[in-house]
Structure formats: C-alpha cells, structure tokens
Amino acid sequence: MTFKDLDIIEPILRALEGEGYTHPTPIQMQAIPILFKGKDLLGVAQTGTGKTAAFAIPILQQLFINKGKQQGGRGIKALIVTPTRELAIQIGESFTAYGKFTGIRNTVIFGGVKQGKQTHALQRGVEVLIATPGRLLDLMNQGFVSLREVEFAVLDEADHMLDMGFIHDIKKIIAKLPHKRQSLFFSATMPKDIVELSRKILGDFEQVTVRPEQATAEKVEQGVYFVSKKNKPKLLVHLLEESPKDSVLVFSRTKHGANKVVKILDKANVRAAAIHGNKSQTARQKALGDFKDGKIKVLIATDIAARGIDIDELSMVLNYDLPNVPETYVHRIGRTGRASASGIALSFCDKEERPYLKDIEKLIKQEVPRMPEHQFVDDGTEEETEIDDRPARSGNRNRSGNSSKNRGSSGNANSRGGNSGNRRKFSGTRKGFSGKKGA
Image 1 (spheres, helix red, strand yellow):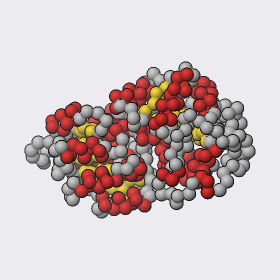
Image 2: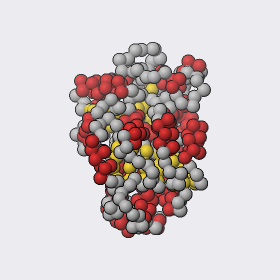
Image 3: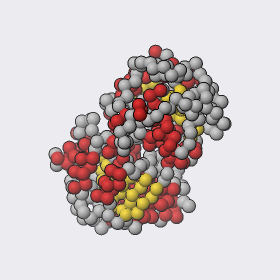
C-alpha cells in the first residue's frame, strides 16, 4: 500500500514525496481511514511507529478541505497536547513538513522560555497548536489561547503525561474543549488510569494497536552487563573507547546522574553533553543539534528529555541506569530501532537493579542476553557510587508496593553475568553481535 491508496489530497502527497515517504507504516494504514470517517481514535503506540503522521495527515487534510467553507480569521482548529518540549517541537516540525503546500499554520508553545515569540505567533493566527500542558494553561489564563473553535484534539504520550503529574492539567484542558470535536488519544501502554482517562475524552471511537514490545525486541540487538555501581563509569568509558566512531545515546535515571556522567567522560577525553529538564531550552536544543550533526558522539539523557529525540542513524542506546518502569525500557531501546532499521541496546545492571531486569524480561517475554565476563563484573558486594541517586522503587506506577527487598532472590544463574548460558560473544562494539547492523 502507498499513501496514494489512502485518498490523501495532492498538496499533502507532494509534501510526503518531498520527505521521501511513499509507504505508510502499520499505524498510519489503520488510523488514517478511521480519522477520515470522523471517528475518535484510541491509539496504542509509542514514538517511532509513525503515529505523528497518522494523526497529522488527516487533520491537515480536513482543515485544508474545510478552509474554503469557513469565514472570518484564523482560529485554533486543532490542538495537540504532549508532555515534553522536545516532542512538541518534533510534532510541530512534522506538521510544517506535511502541510507545506496547504497554507495551514501551526505553532508550538512550551515552558522554560520567555513567552513573547509564542504569544506573537498566536496573535498572528494559527490553525494548529502543539502545546505542553503547563504553558498551554498559562496562556489560556492570560487570554492568548481560546479553545472554543477546536475541532480536533490530540492527547499524545498520555501515559508519560500521567507519570509526570499532568493529570489535573489535562482534566482542566479537556473541560475547556468544545463537546463536538474529533478526539485522538495515544498511549504506549494502557494501565487502568489511562483507560479511565480515555473514557472521559473519547466518544464513539475505534482502537488501533501497534505492539512495540514485540517488534522492538525482535529488531534491536540487546545485551546486559552485570556491573557494580562503582564500576559503571569505568565500563562506560571502556565501551566507548572500543567504538569511538559510534553515536551513543546514554540513559541516566536522574538529572544529577546525567551531569555526573558528562564530567566522567570529559575526564576521559570523550566529548559528551547532557539533556534534561534542568537545562535551558537553548542548551537542550544545542546539545541535540550537535549530536545529530555528529559534533558530539555521546548524548546523556533522562527519559523525560529524550522523549522527542528522533535520530535515524543512532548506533547504540546504552542504559547506564535500568528504568524501574519496564515499559520505559521499550521506549529507550526503540530509539535505536527506528522504523524498519535494526539497532543495538546495551544495559548496565547492578545488584539493586536486578528486580527491574526481571520485570523488563517479563514484559518483553524474553531474556535479555547476558554479556560475557569483563573486568568490571559485579561480584555481589554492596558498593557506593557518586553517580547513583535513584528514587525509591515505591514510586513505580501500578505496582503493588513491593520493593527489591521482598521480591525474592535475583542473584541466581539467570541473573549473574558469569553463569548464564545465553551470553553473547561480544567485545563491547557492534562487531560482536551477529552482524545484523552495519555488516
């Protein structure tokens, strides 16, 4: 199937061809016809599956078709709410690219920067508004944003927004939307609180599901190193020195940890930058731009900041800290397995993180291959680290409250680096895997 088969209008087809898009992804094939019918949509899909185009193309097409029928000036007809500034910017860029020949204006608003440029764009008039919840409510309260004319409302990355504590903001925004509208709700996972929220937003809806945990696990070469907390920095430097030409996205659980990793790599003469919520928007965009342009080879990111990172040629994802929410692992490793590409994802696992690994393997329904013995292997002793400042496990959403202390022993043959029979012959670089990437 091609985009032409989806009855997309010529101006958008021309823009898609200019971007090199000819064949829709599975979520685009399923979602676009549903949205053309005017139905609400519940989409279960993560970033990297093509969901932005799945909702942007139908919205742009319907706005373009209705443009000649509407009288008066520009008003906000489509609202897309998303959790982070990076993802908001990325969605805005997609609307600009796909709507290049439609004359449909969009703008992006987010916090952390002065509002002057954003309010100026709003005053000039836009049909599509992409926003983070806090800044949206702020500008609504100031009178710069009215949602009275909204015809299309999109809630993107809903589960992540709830993780970030935006539930009350989202409810306030929903309350200001017109009752008559087309609503789109996207989430990578569907825990109970997400299901309840979707019921408040959606009317007569259809559901489209793309199962990322299965697809991602199949196309991304994975591996885990059992390493003490104290020796994580040494192993990181060792792996990076073995693959100096690779671009590596390193995940840290905390902002403080991300900054510490940058300092360690700097001492080892490895150019790196950190991207997290405490960085200014300018600093974050510069770091991301330098990484995409190859000026730096290593980017250390927290999960919130990394949500909008979309890089086609990413050599490797490295989990310096394993996430305590297993779905987050799927999001992370999917950064290096974009679209139909393969990728490599390595993880460091210390003694305290072994319960997290068990949860991850339960979710993806496979054992993450154990990496061979190395000089920094975890010997099971408790050690302090200057980097790790992870939160308590009790913060994990939808948990029964069990901590790592009462989850049972995880130091068995399936958890220890030296005993597993499923280890990869891997030297620490891409070449050690089976040759699926870069062969």
